[in-house]
Length: 300
Image 1: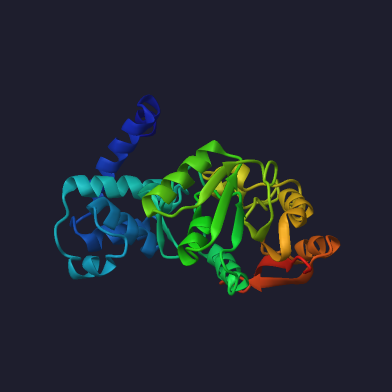
Image 2: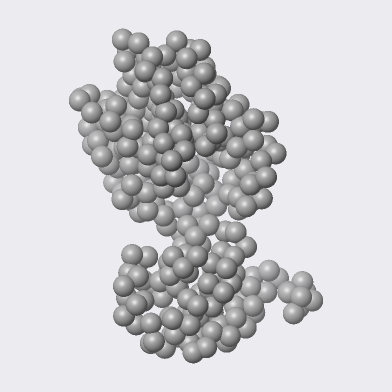
């Protein structure tokens, strides 16, 4: 089989492997398919989402799988599911395989041009909404928007806000703009490297920049995601330093700068914020209890 896969185009090899795998799922039912996927090493939730995708059903329809766990599955569905599971076992994010990821209640189209939005980033959105409370028609800047997840979540929650989303990648902006059109959210977009070319002042600047060190041992597990959106110098702090240095000039009086960063970078980021003379320097914890976001306020 190894020689066969090397001599065929990659897509043909995947199709052949999927056909073989699907025959190994016996009986051809949802229950057997999920058991096979878990034996392959997939988390049960990932396997359920991929099976629902192969069936053309909503990812939230897991109750259907329970109610129909003994129903026969079409051979084409099994082959598609097996191919998806092989790719997931090789490290591809589920969002890339299904093409969609829910973030803050919004269904976002996702592909390999952008990072797969993480649930922990919703903590940053929660904090942003807190600091925007009571501000009429706030001006918001989202730096390194990627799929548009943060900007679109804030615009959806605060329809009165004027949200500008910036990214250096034209590919990422294409994904974000398509999401904004599909969701009918009036976020404005601009191609720029961080604050270069940005004009005006903002009540909130928010960013989830690259923050992984170049030699981080976890990088191989993220090989399917865009490297430029992950790595930021030897310590993972290069982009955070630049944003913190430039952002105060674009903050309105009492405006806030909020940043996501690595689980062990909070103290370093707080030091950067203090060095810029910002007030109310603090951090927030993610779902796992780590200090994942730090921020500060421009003096009035």
